[in-house]
Image (cartoon, rainbow, N blue to C red):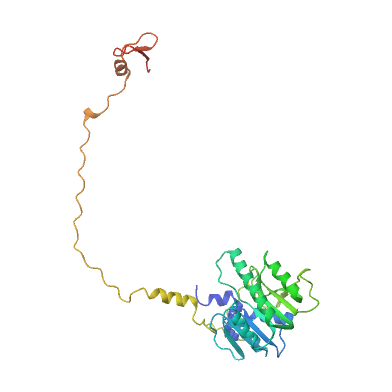
Length: 319
């Protein structure tokens, strides 16, 4: 499989490289904003779990001020203030609050997956719950909150919690998200409003970007007739990725030069065990024919009872 194969299979991955976005997820936020109208300059937006920065790029292009928060390092983006810290740490939240309130809080983060659906969904929902608590401390009255969720049994509790705090809550699915994925986005607006419904009611489902490219379809490399295709590398590679540190620490225990093994003289193989001579004909058990059995059992009467001469007691003959 060549390096161009993903450009054919994932149209948004290709468009992200062509238009300068660091991740294909930038089109998810673009489609959410086009349908729901999330951003109006000069808003102040806090992007939680921002690395590598695709959503922060979208916010910066709308003219809004953006604060990007992530545990990992992120390359600079013009117009974006970066905060490196743990989302679950209180000091990180206090550093963000010191910069002022937020009109919109975004969270497109996802924990490291294990490939087990129930465990991955539970970890994702726990991350969303933490993001909701952070948004409660940062949002100004009437603010909005957008977060990724995995649709499942636990997602109902998240939507009920949002409906207690926000007046308008919907479940949105952008066209950039694949159909087979359980991924969706909780979009809550009107923070602290008196119109909050106390967690009751049905959450509407909204499809976003339905006129854009299909994420599950393959497209030719030459997508536009007036534009030649050219392969492009990703816009921004990860900074100090976790797998690089793990492989570096593993290589420390491997010596640069391996000493050759000492050559030892070839040892003669042990002699084979002596072969046993074949059994003689005298060792063969005699055939148990009728005559030999009768001689071995001794005399018997007409009733089939054999008399043992030594013991003088009768026994039944074995015929």
